[in-house]
Length: 98
Image (cartoon, rainbow, N blue to C red; front, side, top):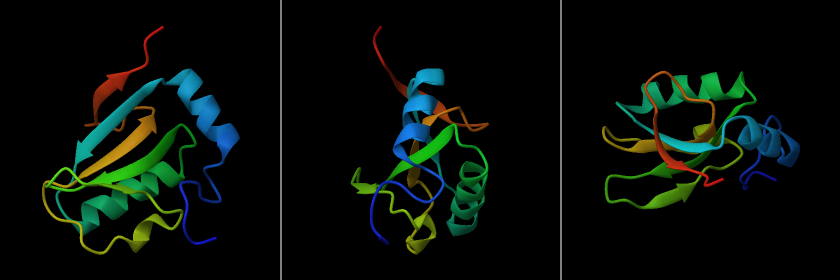
């Protein structure tokens, strides 16, 4: 299906493994559409980085579709929220309690 949290590279098993290795949720501020697309390309090549939401300037969370490049209205200040390994400038925002 075209809608859903998981894509052909992000399935439930990959999600579980990524969370076991890197149990944090991160967000990274976006500069523009091009910046967003470059980060999505990085996540496609690393199964330990799983994008889950696009957080808009008004704090609205949009579930990341399996075809994540469908978002066409990325604005400066929107944020990519993702699970797993930290992208270079992503800040951890939530850590699972153990």
